[in-house]
Length: 117
Image (tube, rainbow, N blue to C red; front, side, top):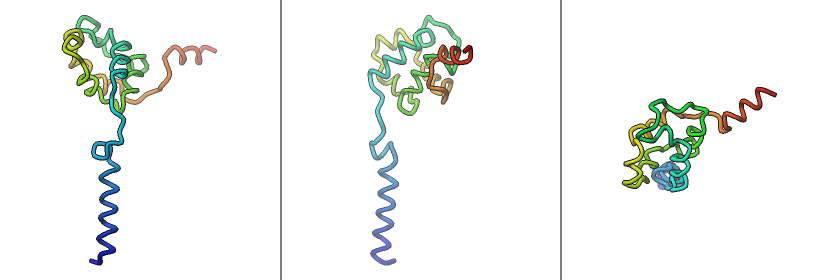
């Protein structure tokens, strides 16, 4: 193999490796603001004493979860303090990523207003 071919392969491999968010570090990280937003909008669903019903995909809770980079609710759990872990049901929070999934980015009341016009 020629040196030029090796250089091209090395360039392609580097581009692939560093384009990957987990390796290249280009992916936005979950912040305390994301955590606060999820805990505020999902309080009834995430609280240890809250409802056992899962949030609806069009709920404000799910919209807050979808705002978390990559729907990585595990990063929200990693940011919880010990006091917050005592107040919230961590296994239930971890289900929000799969329950909420991808969906509309607008609140349910906007959908209702749009349909009722």
